[in-house]
Image 1 (cartoon, rainbow over the protein chains, first blue to last red):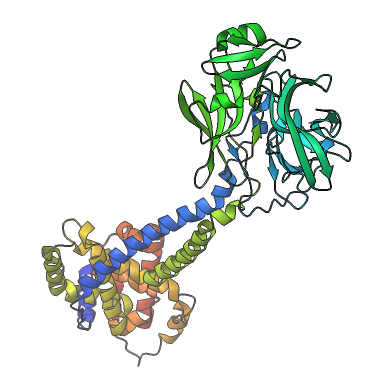
Image 2 (cartoon, one colour):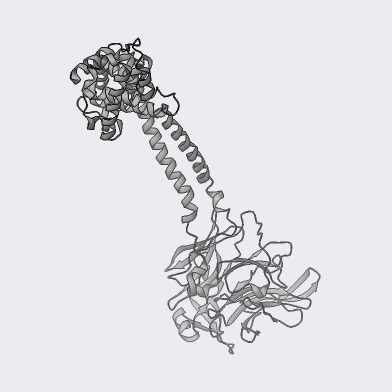
Length: 401
Length: 167
């Protein structure tokens, strides 16, 4: 007996096999199933990627480096934020706890004396300046010293109108009398590049009763920051000192195209100087505000970055949807940052800026929506993808059966 | 898109080879309906992979037939009521009035036994090929073959001569 006989018998049994009906469209259905499977595999791959992305993206998201991350370098951030809706939603910080700043801007509030301070660490702090009235007669926003340690602003107390200078590191507040009697309203103020002097111009206050004021003759002065004393400038009634500049040695500066007119400290004479000669004699200078308007008239002057060859103006221009921080370089204008609109009465620590590195990368926007709000589609995608994966899994099991 | 020639080749294959596939499927399943399902499933899977099949498609389709049947009986293994055990069958064997022919005897085998028997003696696969097709060891194929033949001898003593091959 051999396997052949068994095979023959099995073949005989197999004769009872049914006539198998094969549908005419079996091939088409098979091909469709293949296409479907490929699509599902593709979708599964996408879904897996989406799930992986959703899980890892928040983990891998690099925290935008704050200004603090620049270590000792510090710097003015290239984005200065403000809430879109005007709602600051910041706790009040005591003046003594503010710390060194890189930028400040006043906010319109019921109290009318509040400013936002962007600290060297990149934090945004809201603080109140005693005697400051943002809606008052002066258009001068608080002026940050070049090194970001002092903030000068026109102020009033029960007795006089004056300049107040606050030390942001310690909260010390100094009152600088500008004139006898009721004092004077400063309508311009500029720091010298080394922060040791502050040039101001304004008008004496001749009458004061509640919110009503009257102003008299023009006057100007140079504040010696070390002594917190203002030195009046000569012939203030006859010379237009508005927006005057100041050099590191305290010399006052006007501009009469194409030369600078300098009045040295302790001297009432006025001499013509080129920029280079000025720097050689008096150190770096902050040019008069009018100097920036020689070429550009529509932008707001924020400060100056002086060099041996020229003074680079830091300007703020209106844009949409943001305002832009500009820097004049070699007759051209370079955009160096963005500033939130509506809060554009800005002052920056120009001593932390150089023409080569005017700004540093900004830290995160404290008013930005949480990351997940801007990326709502990632969890949604992950959810859909997970559902798709389950569907594919179920489908695959069904096909295998 | 798949060419008309591929579709034509598939249709031609179905027309020519379905009866043979049906016979194998019938032996594997022992049931006409299951056999039909098995062939249709195998052909459907072949259609899905037709573009990847090079040369003669029959070995490919037959392999699907075997593996699909294995897949089915593995899935049914825990659900179905198992056939009478070898010992039970041996007990029943002395009933000389019960003369089972081979077809009925095959139905008394377990699915694994029947499948191994079909692949070894109807499909002419070697032990190694059978083991490979069913995803089991060659030793298991050998022992299963021995058990299957012994069981057939027990349930159908009149097939003794036929079944000496496995002794």
